[in-house]
Structure formats: C-alpha cells, structure tokens
Amino acid sequence: MPTPRVSFEFFPPKSLEASFRLWETVRLLAPLSPEFVSVTYGAGGTTRQLTHEAVTTIGREFGLNVAAHLTCVDATRDETLAIARAYAEAGVREIVALRGDPPKGAGGFTPHPDGFADSVALIEALREAGDFTLRVGAYPEPHPDAGGPGADVAWLRRKFEAGADSAITQFFFEPETFLRFRDACAAAGIDKPVIPGIVPIENWSGIRKFARGCGASIPAWMDEAFDKAARDGREALLATAICTEMCDRLMAEGVDQLHFYTLNRAHLTRDVCHALGVVPQVALENVA
Image 1 (tube, one colour):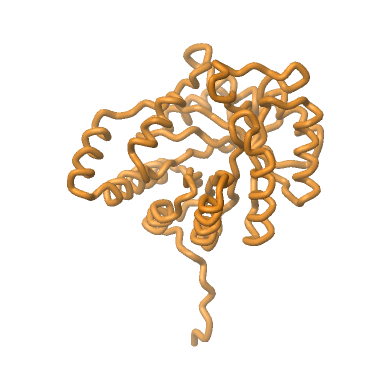
Image 2: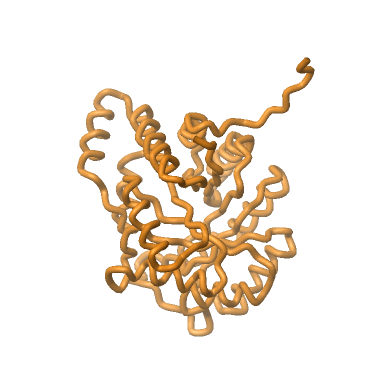
C-alpha cells in the first residue's frame, strides 16, 4: 500500500509555555515532509494577530507550506480581505476559508453587517482577490447548523463551485463515517479532493467534549475502551492503535492523504505516521 501524504493542523499559542509546545511540535513533525500545515483562527477572530505570527514564523523558520485559516466572524469584508492580502505579501499562498465559530455565549453565528454572510461568499471573494489555493471545511456527519439530510454535501458542492480547491473534513471516530460521506460526495458530482481529518486522541475526555460541540458521534465502545485503558495506564497505546487502524482502513479504501489535528502535541501524531510508513526523509550518504 502506498505511503499516504500527510498534513498537520496547529493552533496559535496564547502563552509562553504554549509557544514552546507549538515550536517543539512543529520541530518534531516537520521532518515528515507534510504537504502543508494549517494554523487555526480563534472564535470571533480572537487569535487574528497570533495566527498571522504563527503562520509567517512556521513558513520562515521551517520552510513548510503553511495554510492560514480565515473566517467570516466579527470582521468587515474589507478587513477580511486585508488580512488575506497581508498573507499574500508574506508569501502565504494557501488559505483555509471557513465561516468560523461565533464567540462563546453568542448563541449562534450572526454575520457582521458589513461582512461575509457565509463561507461561500468568502470563497468567491478570495478567488477574485488573488491566486490562492483555497481549502475549505467539510462535515461527514451533520453540522450543528445543517438544514437536513444531504445538506452538508450540497453545501460542500457550493463551496467547490465558488472556487475551493480541496476540503478537509471534521474529525470522526470510525472509518465508515468518512467512506459514506466520500460516496455521497461522488454521487453529488464532487470530484475535487476531500481529505479526511484525523484526531489522534491524546486526551479522551477533552476530545469527547470537542466531539459533542461539533456533532461527531461517539461510539459506545470507545468510552468503554478508554475507561479500561485508563485503569491499566495504557491510554497512549490504545490511542495509537485506534488511530493507526482507522488510517490503515482508509488507505485500504483508496484514501491517499490524511490531515492530522495535532492539538499542538506531536508524539502521538508522529507515532501514527511512523506506523503508516511516513518517516523522516534522510539522504543516504557514502553508500557504495
């Protein structure tokens, strides 16, 4: 089975300790030669400047292809496009274009009066504004705001029609979830890359909380497995086995690219990549 192409997501640090953890994570994963890495954008644009600093530093210091997240939340059209221009001037040519999450307590997404109404409008403007590679989000399970069955596939198709180049899915816990979604996308005429988003489970209670917030269904067997693993002190071993097995199944079904949500922790992601055959590329010298 061919070795998969990989990419990684990081988030901008908000403290000195978090900064050290981010740079250590990037340092450990950069040798795996990712196709790209992405840097998130906080709810309500709360990490706007931090995101810009992380994106430009990763590109400059590690030579990686960096995709900057950009959202519609709490900004005018002009402000949002100015951020995109600043990225272009810094040599960043990839953007992950998202509607974005509203600030905590907002009760739902409300467009800025002078801003973009949704991700499709943002994608259209970015496509007109410059020569960016545009990546977008996709939901293999219903988005909390989805209008009904099939709505997520239909909305993804609109994003591609607006100019998106590829999509990265929200994380999921069983490979069949992605495979069904991939089939539905193909049936809807979507022929551009849809990359599965993989979350190595560093902390089950934290990931479980994320899952509830984004609509990812949680298999009962995982609760039971992690409860038992916690008692035995084998959470890391279980997490590595679950993630590797899921990725292996996806690859067996023809998936050739995987996007890892690292949560700025490198070791589990690196271990899974190594198990899949993604290892540092070291030049062989003095070989007769």
